[in-house]
Image (cartoon, rainbow, N blue to C red; front, side, top):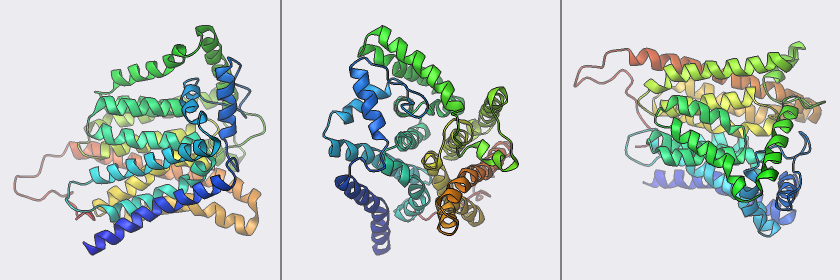
Length: 400
């Protein structure tokens, strides 16, 4: 019990210390390195029925984000900034904790495993949380949805996936892959998506909302190829060989990648009877968002971080030490390697390296997911072990 108490303190410290630091920074300077002024300006324009889209460098979210963020914007500046970031931290922390508990049926305290999952997840997303980027809220919604997907509580999962779409339109691929992986979800997810898209019509004139959606569609086209900017996506890797995907080839690659992942999930995740089903969905969703959706920066990898941490936890539970080390190395290099290079070669080199390394590690992680998907398919075809004999996949757990 004493050891459990120590790990409980460690796990709490991993989350509470960054939270305290972020609060301190906000109190000292509420808008320092913050993207929320873009949100505030858009909300003000929304309530005065003015245009909110001004190109890829401005507001890039669906209209339902505007009344959603208004709940925070109506508060005082410091309270708004603190609560906005606290919502992301709390959602990520609680979601990862619940997923950690669901990964194993072994009784006992899971704080040691939760500490590992947190260490491999939270630091990657701290910059996004610190800056108030809605990518962190999206990540939290996906992790919380994962908890309910595993428990087959479809309406609660739908609620979190719908809220993820409110936070960022990049949630759409994750919703689509969830509908493929969990047959009981698809029509609920469709209703949830429609409810999100229709919500602004309850709060503003229909003509104005129609104009917003038309402007969003035009703005989205600009976001796919913003002039003079490079990002940490698939092009970040291809740029090393002076190759860039744009226009029709880029669209075809994005569609083909989405279809390939959907087919893979159809044949693998649907056959998994344990937490791998959720992990495959979360991993493929995060990988697709990072590699094939527009304008992802180094901070955006908060949307992949939970999948990395939880897969490492899964491998720990099942005694796969080498895979724990591999996923931990992916996570730690995304977290630290670019900063180390920046110390010696300067910030410009650091930024360019990050745009290459983070998507490269995502590709490596995607390869791991493909192997796990194949194992799931082949494993489901094997006859069950005779009664009374231990399974070949039985494992130990830290949560004892």
